[in-house]
Amino acid sequence: MEHFLLSDTEKEELKQFIGAEAELPDMLNARERRVWVQEKLLAEYSGVLVSFTLNIPGPVKVLPYVPETFELALKEILQALSDSGIPVLKRSLILDRTGPEAFLCVDADALDVKRLLVPLEDASKLGRLYDIDIIGRDGKKISRSDIGKPGRTCLLCERPARECSRSRTHSVSELTAAIEKIFKENFAG
Image (cartoon, rainbow, N blue to C red):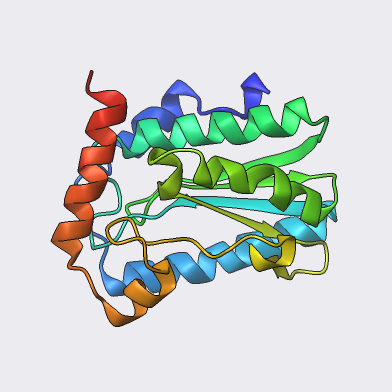
């Protein structure tokens, strides 16, 4: 498991993006790149794919404590997989101003992996920043409703997160302040 964690070089690479703004073209390119990487890994390893990012709104995707949060989450994901006897076939990372991304190809049933990892997203305030997607061997994303779980709630008002996101109920500065508070509660003593 240790060899799948972030190396010192990868940690430093990610830290160089703290405070850097990602513009719309960067985000669109990142989305296209993510889909390409997902398709490539699914084709190459014919396993289930765990695609992990952090939910960070606004143009700055690598805030202070994002590197630590990403590393902690990756460790939690890998530990959960290891504890369940699920082998990781391949680990791939993208470290960029658009935010860190991890891709883990695993040999397991997609629904079982989703059931295993959803609790990490729900276990704590920090976990609510985790965005762990599970993509089946057929390329289809497994939803929370596929395993009988409700959708995620908003960080600020507990309404459905999709609803608040689509209608832009909360400003980026409000959301960023809430996220920074979560980071400080977890990492700043």
